[in-house]
Length: 277
Image (cartoon, rainbow, N blue to C red; front, side, top):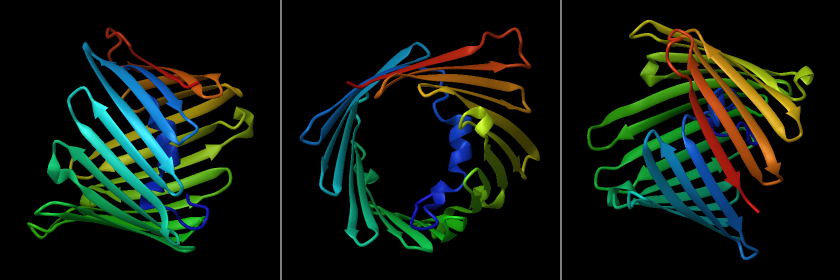
């Protein structure tokens, strides 16, 4: 979370979710990146998903407290994001647009305080939606809520609430989501015995279907360049990941997924190579 306060609502439970889901993939992905001294970065990415290839080219320009991102993909979509930090004290502004959908424009304002964080986002179209979130607390405990309001219908598209208790070696979080139809509770603990790795357990329940999912995962730091992760849920889905730092800015990630309830099926594998000089 943000060191000055409780952080954003999206930070609640993020550490546990990252350990369980971040970098896991069944795709093959190659990214080549570069960054110049004048503040311009370029990323070229090719992804093979199933039998289909997609790609995109992204550019980023940094100047003082502003960052401008552009991305063009093989489906002729163009996205742009302008982020201005500290446009006012402790206030960030983010403007985004995705073409050819001219109704995708969005403006977001984030304000950070020692004991509170607020965000407000407006879609820039004829029937705008309004997204708001608030988090109250300290870096050691935070309570938050978020909602999305549709101005054309006068209805709420979503409303969620959560609580997080982060400590130096652990993190507990609980989120009530899907308009109160689901709840997710997670506990993450870091161990010196894992060389800085961690274990996490997450249980989620969807009340409308009485479906429960228990997922456990762990990470282990093999050395300063290599991390391995694994996860398993009560539905028999097993995942494993290895990430190796080839150079200070280049990474190779290999991941796999296997359904232990369908032993006749082949496991799925993913490969991601990120290269940066």
